[in-house]
Length: 53
Image (tube, rainbow, N blue to C red; front, side, top):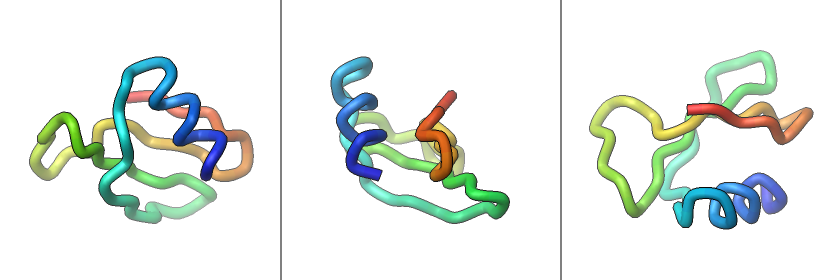
């Protein structure tokens, strides 16, 4: 996940606060800098490192 965290910070200046595994190698990610409530800021695939939000 470190590579993902580096990419997230470099692109958006966001730092992960919490992860929730949702299956099939995918994780929901909440960040410290933006309160999105119940919705994650991005979803990341642990196998590819690709993320979207």
